[in-house]
Image 1: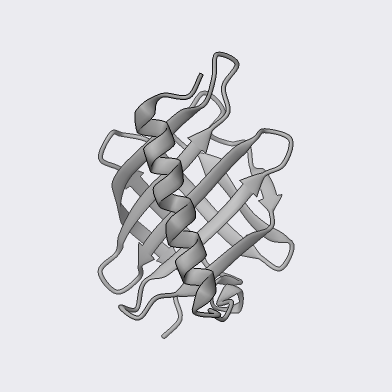
Image 2: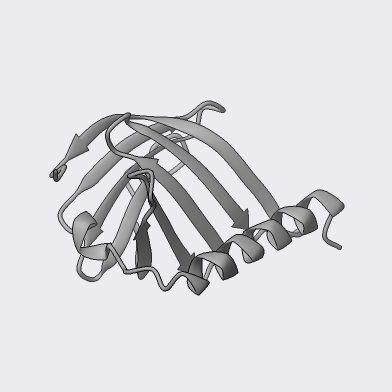
Length: 138
């Protein structure tokens, strides 16, 4: 059973995605190829993400297996009119769907995820600070 909060968040995301698609956005995946980010959410979770032609991969630095790379997962990226990037990917085999809103200039990130768990889906919605970037492009 999905909670009312989860349902509202999912519907809001789908409406946003539909409106974004109506504007025929252009993929910005090439911008990310070769870049790596390290960031930490306000709740304490910390990640290292890298982008390659095969997809994006990440290490969950604050979890029980910080040296394990998860991925690569195909991803999509759009440049917003505010100079931020909206990235999204689905983790095939795990059932997680992740969306990041990244502002490379200000080194901020907002993460949203629907995480598949044995006892039902969990939602994640938190801001993060990017503390290291490699391969940053103008």
